[in-house]
Amino acid sequence: MRAGIVVTVTPQDRIRLEAIVADRNTRQKHAARARVIVATADGCGTTGITRRSGLSKPGVWRWQERFKREGVDGLLRDKTLKPGNPTKDLRGERTGRSARGFATRPVLCRSHTTTGDTIGASSRTVATTGTD
Image 1 (spheres, helix red, strand yellow):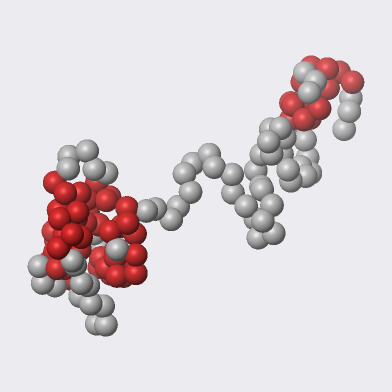
Image 2 (cartoon, helix red, strand yellow):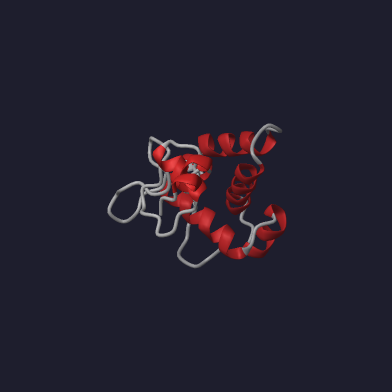
């Protein structure tokens, strides 16, 4: 284990971690994270934990630190956004598509199909009217 990281596993946490590992319906990433903590509690070194869990050393250290800070719930939480969720830029404004489905950022060059989608007309109407 990395110097300075001491992981203390309570009996309740250990029961919960072993249940996560044993449950066949658990996501594999959660089971691997739980295996890291169980192996750490058993006194295995980082190399032994990497062999047991299939994670890299930085991955092992990451989950040890997260468990130390947040407990079992921290292992089951993901920091990433799910696909399709709106993202926010630095000002806190949504980027990508707005609630109406139009692009919120200005488009510098539009084809007749994107212009038609934006104004609610067919692409053929836009192409024949010559808007640009």
